[in-house]
Length: 325
Length: 258
Image (cartoon, rainbow over all chains, first blue to last red; front, side, top):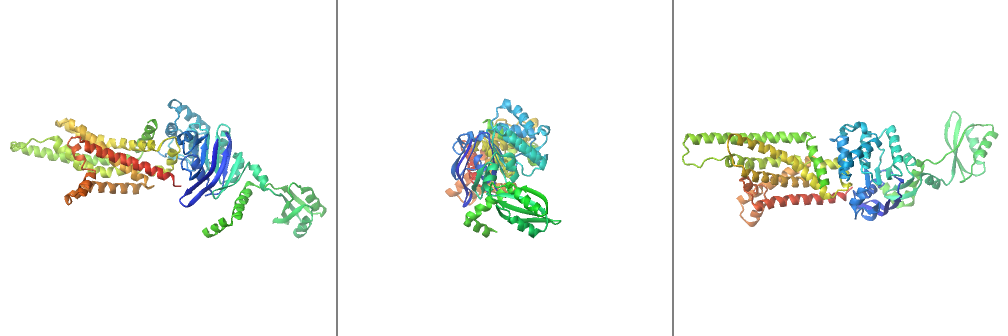
């Protein structure tokens, strides 16, 4: 549904996005993950036709965004980071205006507004002025605006930024509900978001794609070893010594101590479950085993790893960073 | 066309949902009313005097020539140099500041549709000022009998003159995000264009005549007398087209920036 091929975007001498390629299948929810300034917004702006690419091509529903911009735009709904609303209009007036410029047939405008308002739960604020609505409501009006012409493709730039936790959960549910009917691309720098809403993730850093995959695939890919956390009440040095002698362990490291109990982080070979051995070692020594669990890498860790990896691979980049700081 | 109307309608609506719209109407009504009153009062006193002196063979006084023409040409063309910048200053800066420019540029609209829509919205608000002007002039019909036909040329002239200013002001508004800067630069440009014909006072060279030709108000003279001259018409239409063209260029350039 969306094809991005070798996209590069420069602002004068600054390269915002460099040789980015990815595809989004029909009905898929793709997460665009990266730190601030990674090039997420720029990429989305090119997909929506707001900015022309410097190099490469982008097609939406088969239409090139440069050569056939109107056709591509007709099939795209876009929610920028700040909802593009007119503060002096009421919600109903605003949605009617957007429906008109998006080419919704005049007869269907009322019906579409009602449907979309229902979907994003803004039916009760139709006659309120947008400037007087809360941030959460404005965001929903922005989402309604993006949906009003029932586009094939939805591009959402940080759709949950600035919302309170309840609104964030609602928005994520809403986005999940859109999958299937619409192809969704959403950007975020909040890690838990992608695992909760997206089927596939593109990680971008400093304008380049660092990794692509399903959220759990990424976890597996990065997880070159298993991690076990064990909390023991006993003499720390001895416990550590004993644990290090358990077969299959790479290394053991104390993480935190509280009331005589120590938590160790244990790394072992991939695919090897060392929990029974660890438990036996502790119990044999008459220490108290308080807790024992495996630790899956959180996406937060992955993300840190991905970005640090990138810097390590390209020393020139890290030099630049040093200069800047 | 449908899209142009949608954009224009929203633009026009926003003038009536802001203080600036009502302030402009009030301010214009006061200025226009004051000058209308003083021209009319002067006219009445002079007519009494002439009647007292028995005419003395002087040509009869004429409402068109002694009230309407000086009001339009002498006063309103200058007043509009100050009243139009606040109309155009918000056209693009507001969209840029609120981010709604992203909505417009990612909608299936051509650049020209957006620009024409905004321009027509501004012209729509400006026409309220023109209507206010003619409400005053209409008073003359209650107490006298001015010629009605020249009023058509005068109305056309006001629209063309205002349209030219609005198109230039719109272009200047695309160059900044700040409404105050847009308004002050626009007023400055208008003022320079207004005084361009003063060069003929000290220069009769070709360059002087060209500059004088470019002055905004010189072309209003015929319209104010109730005469439609093709060269004046062409002048104002060219300025409008130029303003729209420059705006389109400026919007294109905008797209390359973050």
